[in-house]
Image (cartoon, rainbow, N blue to C red; front, side, top):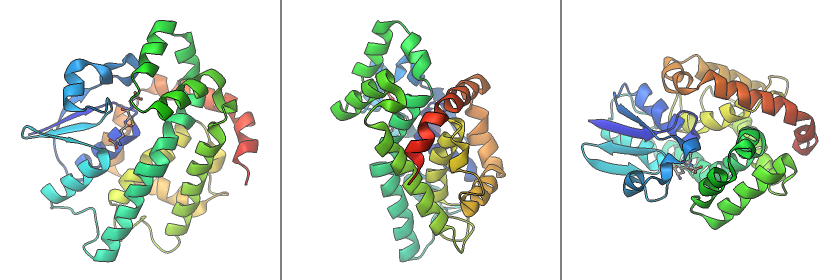
Length: 264
Ligand SMILES: N[C@@H](CCC(=O)N[C@@H](CS)C(=O)NCC(=O)O)C(=O)O
């Protein structure tokens, strides 16, 4: 019996749902609305003391941290393995997961909140906005969130976060030089981990970073991932069209200011 506490557009939730779908594991869904601050509810914090999604509960055992969750799922449900069996392949997978946890994911809210939901957040009652920011556990992340909500892409933190995304796209383009998938011969944990961040750029209408002229192998990989049934079930089905429309509209408006910052 698997239960997943998650949010539709959360990158870490998308990653876990992709692995569940790829492995054909059914789960009971509990949505935690991050925009309404449900990650800070007392009951939820008992499960996940970091006030974040996702949390997976397997036969009553509580698992947090998305990279650890997907590795657990790959171990606990070994049919349809999503990591190579050789030591070097497993090392390469771990290296991508570590990059996502330590470098890419911390940059994601900075890029997202500077562009996407910023306007809606600024229009919310100040006490709602403040309560949501105050709930962020890490003080640096809290200060950064405040800065990007106030200043958007002109916040001093924005360009460095964007550079992390662009550097990751370049590394992916290189990794795909002679293979279809990021590690090994089939769609795996590394692909499931990176897809949500590439998709986030698309949702924010940063299309020139993703097009085939800029990074042809990455563009092919993105199309291949999107063609998988798991993508429709784990990602598309949980993406409210109105929210995506809002993100893309704000992204298009921001692009003229972002483009000069994206140049090497
Ligand atoms: N290291 C954690 C990070 C989880 C995380 O940051 N989740 C985000 C959504 S992708 C979240 O819940 N944020 C809560 C907030 O923004 O207040 C993991 O991999 O599970």
